[in-house]
Image 1 (cartoon, rainbow, N blue to C red):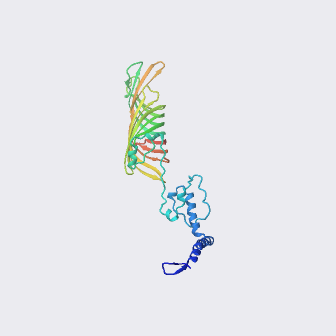
Image 2 (image 1 turned 90 degrees about the horizontal axis):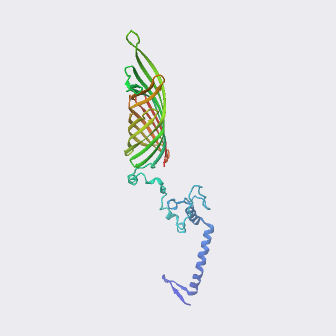
Image 3 (image 1 turned 90 degrees about the vertical axis):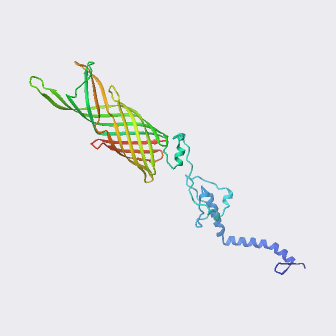
Length: 369
């Protein structure tokens, strides 16, 4: 009988060798089936990893599943989730291989908007870490200017084409004005630090005029007769204009310079003109994860004008008048805040005072796109 020598020096018959070669695979298969039936844990663990991969919307960012996860098909994802079907090669990875990937969120790129051509130099600003607002905005500007003292420096009157003459020695005027203004505002960021805007809207002006009148006493007795008369006027009309804003900042601090020019048609022969310049300094923070800007500012309101008008008086003729007037306290200190509720919607609240009884209130909701 032929024999076979093994490396340990033992001898086995050739027939026995053939039997072992035929029987070993059967034995291995039998042992494998017994282990699978009696102890499925090692294989169910691999199945859990496979199920986890198939249900993960971003498999490259999912941490390996805990062995405590129940067996069976994966739970359906929420209706808002993006369903992802993993490729076959990924399903074959073991839990040990998956453990090398961290659960780090993947930032989705923003959709490009039609308005993305503005502002110019936006890419340079974003590279430096600045967060830019959307370039275009449309908003409503509601302004209330309450109890502001107006100085009427001179009043001139002319009759039937005669040159208007001053009546200041006979009449001394003092006025208090309350103004309400509602505008539509359109703006655009041309550069990351430059915004231009246009205004158009309605203005309502209520004025209380105190006239101290001096009249020469008639008759042979010399002297003057003096009395005071309060006159209330109500004017309304159209206002329009535009302006520009320059901004700069350092870390969470920012600085803003703003200037605008408007004209108002209130029924006089000439339009009222106004130039307002303001400088502000503020700080950027958050209010419950909502971006918030707060500031303090100082503004100069150049609203000095000459009101010109005329009236036809029966029995007298055509009377023309001119009145030079302007604010007694043109400087205004303001305290404000801008709350960016969403990327598209925000609101500005502003309160100002001239420190002499005049107050300013501004509310500006804005939609950006």
